[in-house]
Image 1 (spheres, rainbow, N blue to C red):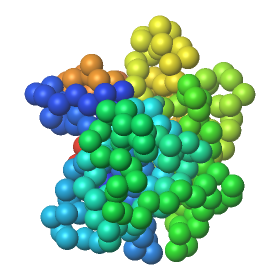
Image 2 (cartoon, rainbow, N blue to C red):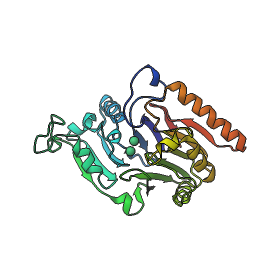
Image 3 (cartoon, protein in one colour):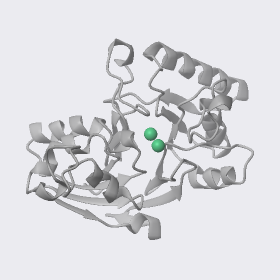
Image 4 (cartoon, rainbow, N blue to C red):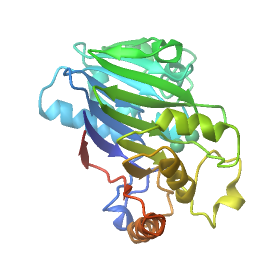
Length: 278
Ligand SMILES: [Zn+2]
Ligand SMILES: [Zn+2]
């Protein structure tokens, strides 16, 4: 499995000098599966660059697009994903039950609502919706993908990818409650994962003021990684206000926490354009 981060930021895109290292684009991941198929998670603004990448390689695009949920920061890039304007493109949307509705919503509708110059129906590509991953394990050429509900306003889905003995878990826009009943479900879902990519929008100092917003602080993400015996934790959905220097400090604080616990957990912040190989 190869995982590329096209967008790592939470809430809204934040281009500029303070976000050069970790990136300013919102959620989008490209996952190359062992069998050769490609999965994309979410259509945040990062998906625009992914589309340009496909274009530059003249690739025929045939992807599964897994939607975690449809808050703006997770759909905003879709009208700017150039392959949707090509008749050769096939996109099978799966995941969150309203995923297709969210993707359609960013275009003009039949009433001419003025959101975008083009109607969804005018797109040349073949875009279908299937909700397989919520019914049971979705199998793509031997890779098993499972989902779990998120603790987030209006809900959402997290995903787990299993290939032979390798496991990747992606949980963003998820408010962990380490003393609540649901925490055990997340521990079970992440058990033994090689890589856990988790929402860490807030610091432990900020989280009391943001309860119910549907995001976690990095300490809760660490607690989950420790409990589930995860090998590597990737901090994701960086707060828009968080500068590169702040994220570096957070990574250092996480390292302190790991050392104090005597754990071998690796921790790193998600970085736009970086690649992880599993
Ligand atoms: Zn988000
Ligand atoms: Zn959200």
